[in-house]
Image (tube, rainbow, N blue to C red; front, side, top):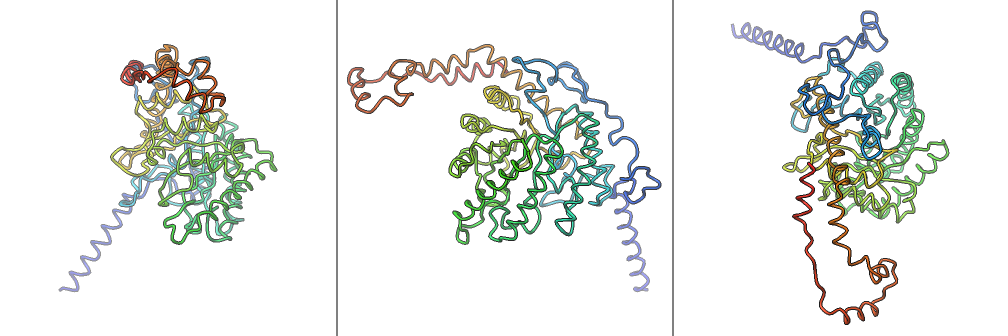
Length: 479
């Protein structure tokens, strides 16, 4: 009796597991079932049926699938909004993001996914990518090499996979009239990179990373990419006790020098970008922030070859505001691109949320306008849906609100510049230097003896108010 009961219970549990598997499995056309599905990648028709091309309808529109503030052809300060903003979709978050986190399994099962990382599945995702950016009205996209094409068992196989997917991407982007904002190599996920890539203690890993970047740069060039990014997620250390930091930094500089040489050899005219981040996944990352990265580039004579890709969430992780990082990069002539996202002030890690803060967006756009724009860089949405957002429609809504937020920030920044009150307040604050002696100081021609003599003539200085509250009032009036 007990044996019979046990068998019955086992059968029940097996049936229950089977039912859960059926429910959890995305209902898609299997990539292997080419005969019944039509195309070589196993998908027929639209990936986003029912989603129209997103149009500008103005602030009063109640249509959630429309732009309220982003009007691409509208001119702001003599330049079209689309040229100020140069929006780009991040392939990895949009098409490879699963909603998984360290405490939970994936939550997103997009209809086109078949549960594999096959070459056919990679091609299907690429077609979905171009339908998405076309309907969204974005001109650019960005990629990591291993996100668009599966890793092979050998470097040769990986390169062949990448070439095959890149050929499809070239065909699709030519037809859709889209471009690559930037490409990069994924040098952080594979176990071989656990000690770093350019800073690995293992020579063979350093060489493998170089070969992978070589191929990723070739593909970026082939696709007409306008920039190439280096994000050193594992270029740092967990402990200095077992780390030769000087040697690792020297190795990283040699790696970048080789990248510059190869870029020139193949005729790639895109900008090379370094993306600062303080930590995560390493305890300390060598390109901690914009100032650290600028110092590294100057030390090794690379400042004329690289610019910076500033990510707002990385700025806050390093203890700065995004505006601080943008201004640091800008005044050093290094502002090249912005990864548009934000973090949660209550969370101490890189949450990669879509930027929705109008005040933050306005501050960002003030820096962009002062920089004269970002071209050949732009705004890449290195941002992902929240784990709990699981509808295909959410992909569009997230990008729409991110684009509208930055467009609204651009409008506000333009309003502040046209009004002139804020810039006049700043000018007046430093007007004491708009004098003969001030000009001497700024030209480096005023020595300590001269300044001591002037102090004896003037007596005790009169110190004016900084008018911070007035500055904040003027700023808030534009929001």
